[in-house]
Image (tube, rainbow, N blue to C red; front, side, top):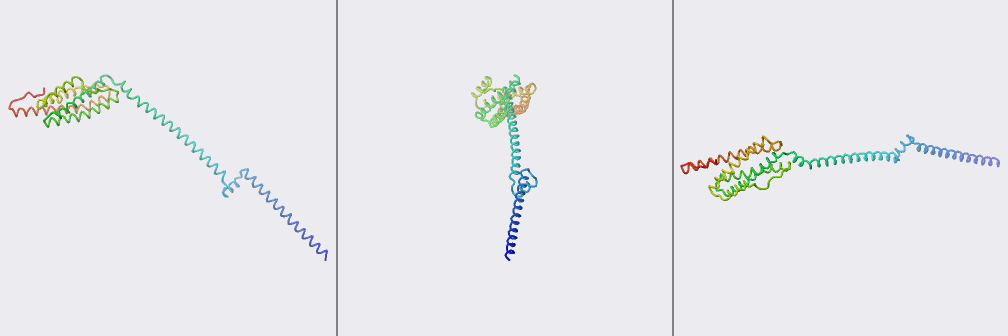
Length: 269
């Protein structure tokens, strides 16, 4: 009986030992498998990398993607910077060319064309000055209306002349010449009917005939296309002024004849 108990004890010990041995083998096998898994991950096994990504461990993959995008952004920024530099250089070059344009235009404009611009300016200034004088001194409504039209139209024409002169580098006169000053001084001394008659004869007809003749000459002989175009633009306006002055003078002559019954010498010649 005692032998049987001893035998059972030995068998129980053997069983326990066998179980412990089996557990040790399994533990060693599991450790070896883990080592193999880690080794494969270090070698860049695609399957393990994919598994790691599905588990949410995607640091390396995302980091690489961010680096790629960062590189692309840097390239785009560099390209934009280079493009901006090119645009700035082009703008600077255009600005430099624009700054030298007036000097180039001034060098190309001949003396005849420069004189044409100066004559236009002088004619406009004279008509503006005498027109203002007539608006303030005349007592005749028709004379006043004509004089105001001279002020308005020649002020607009003078703005065109000034703009072209600036573009071409031409310095315009800032005051009337001696001839026009003398005419203005003479008109200042007159009044009433005598003033109206002298104003129409001088500023209305004689000065417009002179200005129209110079404009026609400029249209034919001007070398600069812009000067020629401005003369062509002003010519019909000045011609219309001349015709209006002649008609107004003729109307006044007929009225004088009708009133006195005898012809007058207000022919404007």
